[in-house]
Image (cartoon, rainbow, N blue to C red; front, side):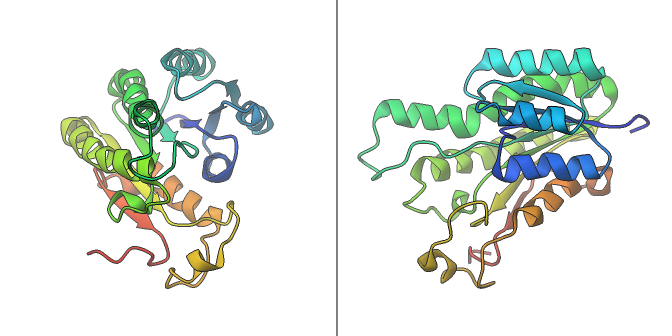
Length: 234
C-alpha cells in the first residue's frame, strides 16, 4: 500500500468494532466508522476520519457509506464487518421473521459489503476484509442460536470468497471471539474458559489489525479463534 491505507469499520459504535477502529488508527490507518447508534459517527470524527450513522441491515446505508468514503478518501483498503446481537430465544421459539433478521444481521451484511468494496479493491490491486464472527460458529451455544447458525454460513462464505479473489490479492478472514470484557461478566461463563477470564477487547483488536495489514498477506479464508481456549474442537 503506497498511500496511507483506509479502513471502513461497520458496527463501530462500541465494543470490538470501536476498539478495532482505535487500534487501526494507532497503526496508521485512516478511518471511516459507521454505526446505527450515532456513536460510530462520533468516533470517526474523533479519529480525524469519517463518521456515518446508518444500519448494516440496510443496503442503501452501506452503499452510501462506501460512496461517501470514496468521495472523502479516494480508496478503500480494508473493511471490518461487525454486528451487535441479533435475535435470541429457544431454538424452536424463534419466529420466521427473526430467523430472516438473523440472516441479515450476521451473513448478508457481509455479502452486501463485499459486493460494494470488491470492485474498488480490484482496481487498487488488493485489500482485506475481516469479519467479526463468534466462537459459537463451530460449537453452537443455545444462548446465541441465530448467531451460531448464520456465522457457520459466514465461515463457508469467507472460504468461497477468498478462493475466488485470492489471486487478485483480496483477502477475507473471520475472527471468532469468545466472551469479551465489553460485556457483563458472568461467573458460569468464566468457569468455561481455560484462560480463566474474559478477553480484553484490545486482544481482539490487535488480531483484527494484523489480519487487515500486509503482515498477514498470505492468510485468507480462515476462521481464527480468539477465545482463551473456550472451544475444544480441533
